[in-house]
Amino acid sequence: MADGFQFDAQSVVRIEAAVQAIEWMAGRGLLPSNLNLGPLPDPAPVECCLAENHPGRGVIFDVYPGTWNHLTHGWNYVPLQAAKAIDWRYGTPYPGAGSKGLFVARPSDRLGTIYECLSLDCAVPPEGCTDTSGSGS
Image (tube, rainbow, N blue to C red; front, top):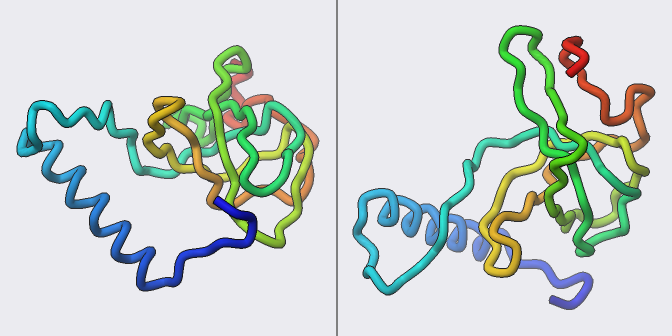
């Protein structure tokens, strides 16, 4: 995809509706048996911590997906479990490793799952990729 290419709002709505329809059909076993979509990731946003400096728009980079800690109301990160992410936002700051933001898991033919950036810190917080849950793990 060329840098600067964007879908208009109506196209985005249609694509999202098509994806939702496919997910609905897949969840009910209504797709042909020879069609392999692979596992569909959870569409709920998850906080991720950048494992490396943000490389710029449309470039794949490593993040540590967080796990919500329901006891401390914060996110836990496992630094040895990096995942791939991409950021298609335009005109935003590209912060360094340790920055956190909201991402959503998307299916990827090449990677299985890729996390799409929805929002991101403008700077690295003092705690970096350590837990925000207070649990220390």
